[in-house]
Image (tube, rainbow, N blue to C red; front, side, top):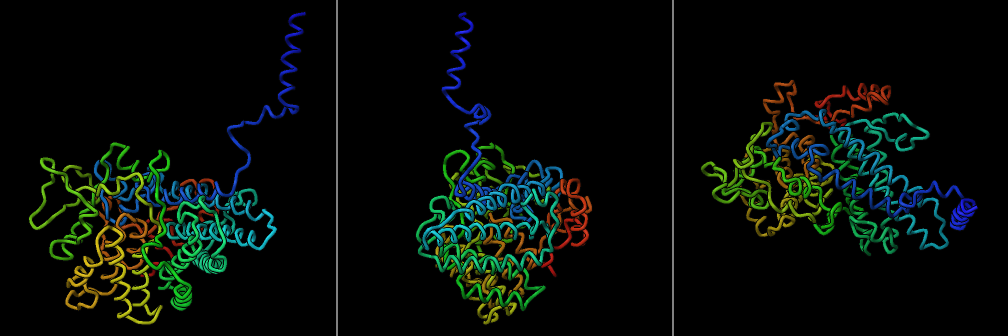
Length: 504
């Protein structure tokens, strides 16, 4: 009798807690729904993390741009990117962690009903912000791989094995999307967007205008990239974006300021500090170029590099202030100058577009007659790009003015013997320090600085600096038919296969 009463007691307790026994299958710690704000924030962070990380499992672009060298394990500087499946990670992060979250956030917002014109404007603004980040993400994928899944991407139920779209066609669609987004954000400039869920521009009162400037700046980047293959189209799109309004100063830079809390720190902090590893040092091609550009060296070197104090100080050659490691080889960490401690801060911002980059793009555009003004206008943008870089790294405009007067830097000094491509390419390389992807892209487009494949890579048959990532290995096994067509369409799935816009 006691056993029967005990069973009845347990049953009444269970049924008093819930009238639906299926609730027992619900994990309260794993919600089945979310808010678009959460998805948007996560996508922003994953995107910036991927672009600023220096983990050789995620991002090797500082190495490809030969701004940094490696110490113990130089495989990535020797262009071995398959052992660690680096292209797989790059591809996966953008499609799974960034674009999928942005897509789901957009769907949730599109399904929301609005009762007032103000609510409708907020909805438009949120969708526009998502669209800008989608366009940025696809542009990075195209510039990394070439043809990629686009029109059939993300919808895994309808397209479990997505086709690869033509890269040039994707580019043109991205430009159109960005132009439309900029119009929306400017029209609804007084209306909110994601608020504090936007961790790039903070969702403040001025954020719509900043997002519009970012969208226009992205158009300018894409237009300059495509200008060698479709100059007339590039000129039209670039001039429209310039008239609409790109970044206007360093205050508009597109960046995410990290936090001190674990999980929200700049990935560099984990890669350079908490890992207790000394895997990276400045690369000698980059350090030497900065040392000899002006007497006494480029003033930004003191912001970029540091020497260990005695007695651990490296042996510095005569006439030098810093010395970089041999690119493509293993290096002894203590023997060379080190990367600035500034990057060791957990809260150091992660930048994906800045005013310096914009000005170098516009200088190139002026030389290519995409905008009026020719070399005279190019000099204005070139000088502005250098000045923006100096100021952003804590130097002054006066420091930049002195630097600009040096013969090897002065844009109009014919005695240097440098072409406009070399002048812009070298200074963009310097200014894009710690922005390895953009430095690598500038090199691919201008062919300056002159970078060479290291001996160790040449011995493996890689005779040139890579100009693209190979496709992820998993694509060949899972999405084989579409992968093979894409590889054939671009001219082969090789490190030396140029992206469609890399004409020269």
